[in-house]
Image 1 (cartoon, rainbow, N blue to C red):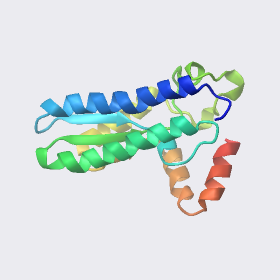
Image 2: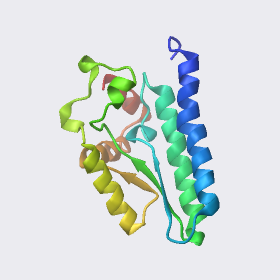
Image 3: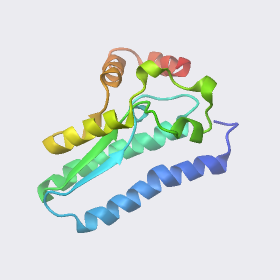
Image 4: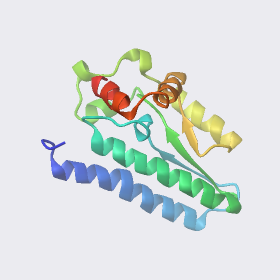
Length: 159
């Protein structure tokens, strides 16, 4: 954190927080019964990620914000989802400054189509404020509830 560019971190905060708030507000101003808003968080919304503290913290904001909006908008018939995908096979890793040597393992990587399928299924059901894509992500997050936060932080640091 202390070695990263402060300006780059602020840019990430503007994108992941300010833009989500601005766009959500604009959408909800005109939303009607039956409309839906999907905000994309991350499994890193739920577990801390050393070396990605700002990313995880901004995604935690997106998730908490979306969950609160889910409850607020229910009476209007507007569904709000906080979608939490895990590693997804897109250009994000490289775009975020990673390279082939730091790419996450294929075994935990989902395709964009898999993430979309999960989101669309949840959109049809309109039951949960938080939607986690991928069974491996669900198992990891469930497991994190039964160990200390200290263990989770150290585990995520090794990832």
